[in-house]
Image (cartoon, rainbow, N blue to C red; front, side, top):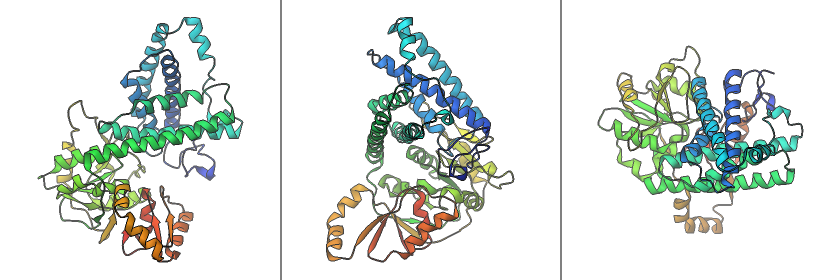
Length: 436
């Protein structure tokens, strides 16, 4: 095989992509991402060892590990040069850490400490399937955690304990002597820190933008040029909305950026029109009819075909990237990102083509649900609500996913569907009013 990747549910034959990723990742990019993860492992081993001696690790290293993990998740970054740039940065950090080892260890003691960790192995080289699966669960868990903490960091919220755990977890799965039982405990601890990461991000979002509230979101269009923003980063949409104010350019959300409409602070922008399109896997057709530029703040990018009419309208920022597409650089300290180029691009484009009309009702986050708790309890007691069904997660393009649509259609009217993630779009077309 020329590559091996099975980190997403689309893995070829349900076992792994060995020639080219279903996502579009080729063998060269896969190898570069593997090297980047190897560097993350080696850096994490050293930061963990040094902390055990009382060292404090600089913020630059902590943030590098988060960014490297985020950039290697599925459908986030296809730009080989961007990954190579991270590799070069990682090599420099590793070199600096090796030189700092003498501050904490003799040369003999440091080499002895490193011997407790196994040399880098491809996942296919780990023969015990339980060990393999548990180690990969930890890796994917900290990758997801990296996404939460990066978004929180962009809103000036950090928790150093989370950085420390991420590095300790990556270091721990690299140990030569580790049992299945210890790995199970580590997987559970990864889940615990996942909840802490989500709580940190929730605090970051709500302290800046207010608690989400029940909101009707328009899914039609207006007759103005526009920008479509996709991904998850609320700081990016805040700065884009500020910079497009009074320019005649509208802003629409796509896929997982939809919840931005529920936050009170964003309702002050009258050019924040609504949501356009649906789940990530339908973006090729949605982007073709949108007519204006598309901004990816994070995943999920579906590689455009060579003759895609929107190919030259894609912009990326943050941990996302795609070769040949304009990447908007990170904000400098004390400054905002510069979205002027994408705004000027939008002004030259036609208004979006309308693909649907109506509204989506959403905003049922925890504070809003708790505010309605007495009404919900009364409905349960009266029998008006008999069951709550959770149907959440990332939607997919396989025909088998129609099972969830069919199941939702057959549920009786006294049930409530709880959704999260772009799985919610699966129920949009079958309901007069979609409540998210």
